[in-house]
Length: 156
Image 1 (cartoon, rainbow, N blue to C red):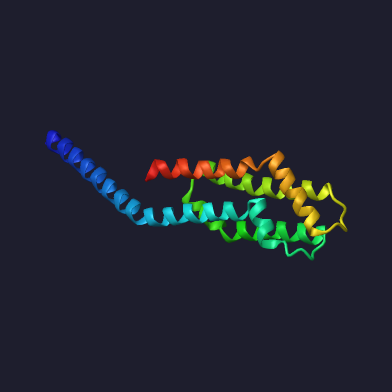
Image 2 (spheres, rainbow, N blue to C red):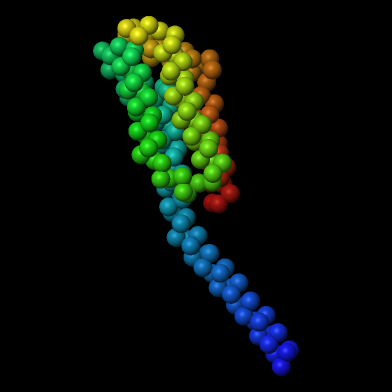
């Protein structure tokens, strides 16, 4: 009887593991399209918050440096907040890279603003941002893009 109970428990454990494996496979199949979409949206977000892209979209040429700085930072914040729910589809390390990219882009804009007078034209601030980006770079955005590609490569 003890042998029968032992083998029954072994069989039951095997069935539970097989069931868990099947459930995990089904969940992965359902989540795969959502994860791919999340990776795509995060890449688009990172491209949109790059200083060069921001300047092309936000600079109308009639704003002063203060107004442009505020608009650029607002655009970064809104873009990030719009995509914040995507963190549930990426690893915490990847999400930290994305947050660092957002913070670095914001800091680059703030640093460029300190190099121009507040009443300067938006065009002057734009030139300073592009100059800083060329010299310092926004490596955090590239690092975040690489982290997304690496993570996506692990799963797909």
